[in-house]
Length: 207
Image 1 (tube, helix red, strand yellow):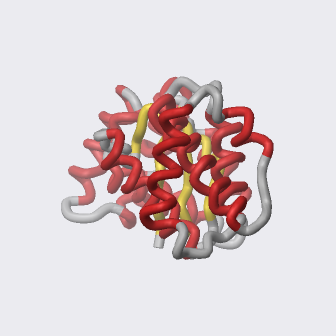
Image 2 (image 1 turned 135 degrees about the vertical axis):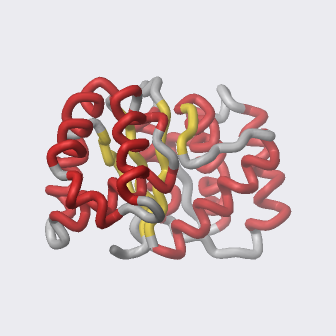
């Protein structure tokens, strides 16, 4: 697969039934995608899924994702459908390598400021705060290029400290770089897709 950053919502109740049953039915298939002691790893994964799919580690989730993807190598929409049926809603992706790198760098900078570890599985409220920061940062960049956006304007009054942080960070490191305007769209669409969601957000990076 190409290098992409995927965003996933979970449905533990569905995964507890559908994903668990699939793991039990197709043990010989998924074992090929597990490292180290595959049979032991599979039993650990099954026990975690039976409890809650949100207990899976990044490596375990990546193995499941690769397993599903390999079944439909030329049909990414079917991969999404099958993941959804089994309790994993792949609801958004950033497809461009350079934008993935910039997104992750901005996330790292925000982690330093907020003193939060926005790991691969992150609370949606904390993730949403980062998205607001990203909207502000990219909006400032667009203004430098003679463009502007409406969403950031409306959010500014509700998040003055995040806007001040974005201004400060842009002055420190952003003004010397040319950011792809698509980044603003990514932040805006992710914000719209997660602002009312209460569960964890999974970020899965493939390369």
